[in-house]
Image 1 (spheres, rainbow, N blue to C red):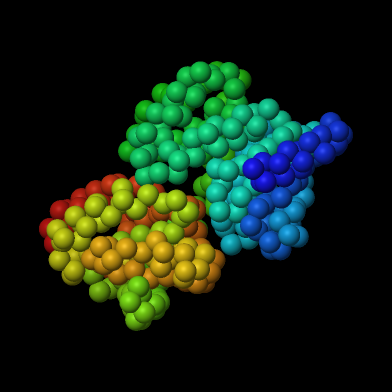
Image 2: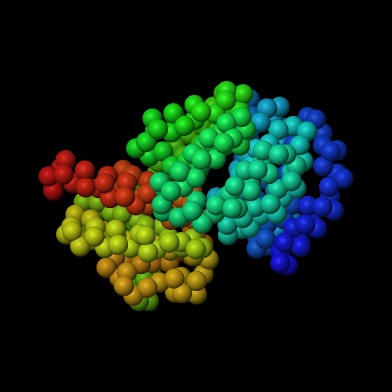
Length: 343
């Protein structure tokens, strides 16, 4: 209730200023609950390239601006890469926002209707969208797109939320339901260029060795060369549905010898207290470690973990052969490779 009142005050008091935007710029202003004083980055692609605006938030309050004559997708992240929110922006708009540092689905935005409607969908469906049930989340998105074919936020949802691994043709057919004016080529190509640039370096990065404390308080040494393949399970998201993941992990560990696969769960929870609350004794079939600094830890920052939970499968040289948020796809990739190599 207190947060809701605060949101209304922030979004209402400044209401008279929203129409005063510069036609040559867009602005994003507001507060990120739980952020404190730290750096943020606003990334977006316009007609002349990828732009990254670095700003300093003071007690969570921030203000950023950029320029794009057409609608483009903007990512607001912490400087260590944690996603805060995504928005549709274009010149002349001033977005007033209330975000949550721990939940990119808990967002309140005023300033342009597409982002307001997009934010509403994320809030109302956050549990399903954050779960490991990608098929269920995809159905929600399909239903929304089907009833909002003429709205640009449908294109934004498809580009950022629809899980299309092993189902690209299905995603393309759904995307085609959106009217052409609501999925402008400039928006689609700009977003894909931005994602491609951000992902290329992370995909090519090799998984490094590391030494971290495990759940029993002992050192856990990881070296890719100790097994044919290693699976890193990055966990620690608030509200993460571990009950949907652990059975799959158990079946994997029980079915293959250690020389074939090594599984390590790497918690990126904010602190060890959160990690220990989430840890369960029945998951000790694989090593569990906690990494200080989360995604910004120097060992893991080059891998650019975009969300939690997340899986990376690497070979004995540390070369990434799968990365994504679908445990089933990660396991399938592993089994195909083991079968192909007859190991």
